[in-house]
Amino acid sequence: MGAGVLIPTWEYANDETSKEHIKNCFSIFFYLYLKIFIKIQKNNITYILYIYIYIYIYLVYIYAR
Image (cartoon, rainbow, N blue to C red; front, side):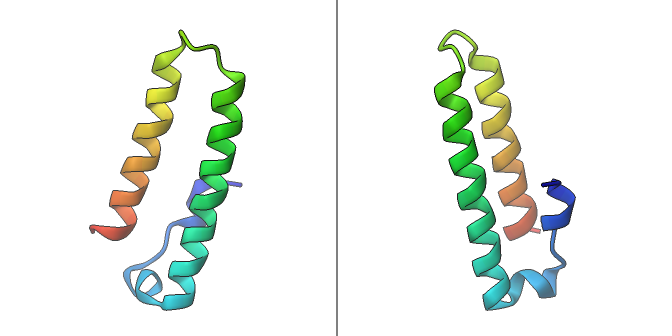
């Protein structure tokens, strides 16, 4: 699933059902992140940090623009 599909407009982000949709998408992101985290060796910290940074920037883009 491409990230570009989930990027809303400001009006879209203010719609309540759309907020629920975005929350569901982030739940899926978090689930996939946990699956990846379990598979990754513990010494590969940079890859984990990249995922954290990606999710953080995405949240800021949606809710703080």
